[in-house]
Image (cartoon, helix red, strand yellow):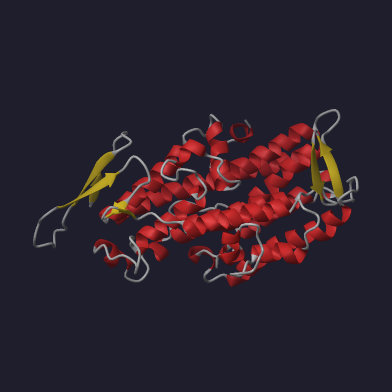
Amino acid sequence: MKKALFTLALSSAIVLTSCSSDDDASGMDETITIDNPISYSFERDGESTVSFSGQTTRIKMAQELLGNFLDETNTAESLKSMFAHDEGVVDFEDAELNASDKSLRSKTAASVDYFYANTTDQALIRADFESWIEAQVNEVFENWNVSAAAGIAGQLADGEKIRYVSAKGLEYNQLFAKGLIGALMTDQALNNYLSTAVLDESSNRADNDAETVLEGKSYTNMEHKWDEAYGYVYGLNADASDPNADLGADSFLNEYIGKLEEDADFAGIADDIFQAFKLGRAAIVAGDYEVRDAQAEIIREKISLVPAVRGVFYMQRAKATLADEVPNYASAFHALSEAYGFIYSLRFTRKPGTDTPYFSKTESDELLEELMDDGANGLWDLKAETIDEISEDIAERFGFTVAQAAD
């Protein structure tokens, strides 16, 4: 068996001893030393082996697409073209994005572990994102200058800001953004690139042990797959080798890991995630796949907390706002729309040690139906009791309290 010696130092050599079995005639022990660097920096022959440009590209595409949700001159066709970008099509202001062969749609609900054999749910999930685009154009853009009310789409004043909502109070841009955190960033990181099916595909272990790099590259395929998971979390950080220095570099996982870090009840989560990514990558370099897989489990547990905690946080914030003598519906509906997207994302989480999410697609859909079904007008009719019931269901499943998330 392997025994790992961990220290609290930021940089250390982790020594592991692999004991021979009774049937091993050699009777010798194999010692593996993992060089765990201070930063996420790895080199071979003086050249960096870290690469996640595809993830950076998709995060930039998502950022620009979301900005266009609030430009009423856009059409459903133009927004869906940005979502399902084809190489060379002028969908974005950034020429590099237009030249890219990457797209958001192709990696939405596309993990090996969850969707390789489940193309039915994959199609339904992608259709959800496209339906939110269509609803933004056909419902919200059509009523852009109309005052929203129960049953009427339009705009609501939120201090100096204006929120644009559906007839049931939903901000489709928030559904899209927070849903993408689950369906793209979380699913690809936890259930695709950290999957043993991907990391160990074909000859990856043998190639990694032999330091056989991909043609024209400085890295092995296994190293690259791990880096791609890392890129969905840190792909826009100014210094990706020290990402905790500027959490909030994007509007997706990076921002909301930072939000949990600001909450005293979850403080330390940002470093837990970064350290696990770094040690797992170092373990790949050293050829220790038990340590690699242990770090993947930590990352799955910690990142899965993000949509759960923030979903409860926004529901409780909305509950407090709706309880005011003069409720600020714009603020409350903004928070509830964020909560909706995070609840949608629960289906892409991953219980450590399992091949399943904390909430299945069916279960997360049931929570969303509960959120919207207190009356014919959706969020306009939502009761505090319903908010608390949903919040308790999520908190209990993940092992935190509603009070912890609501701070």
